[in-house]
Amino acid sequence: MLLVAVGLPPGFTPVSAGLERLVSQGRIDRYELIGNRIVFYLSGLSDGDRLTLPYELQARYVVRAQTPSGAAYNYYA
Image 1 (tube, rainbow, N blue to C red):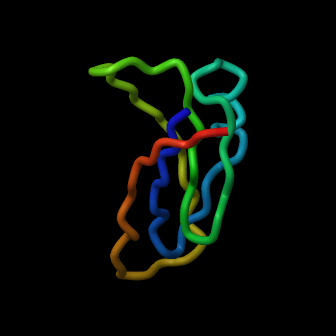
Image 2 (image 1 turned 90 degrees about the vertical axis):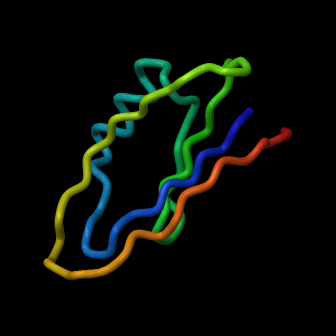
């Protein structure tokens, strides 16, 4: 299983319906909202596979700031 942590820009919140749609479509196994990140749990990817994960963010207020960096990790359950 692969974990992909994506940073959320300050002032934005993810749209839950879009994330749930990714789960119901089988594009991700699950997701978690942890602080200022979305963590996607993925399985079934092979070496060299490409994956696009469209998700929506909703602005809560206007700020000028940087988004936290993202990362991918192997996860062993």
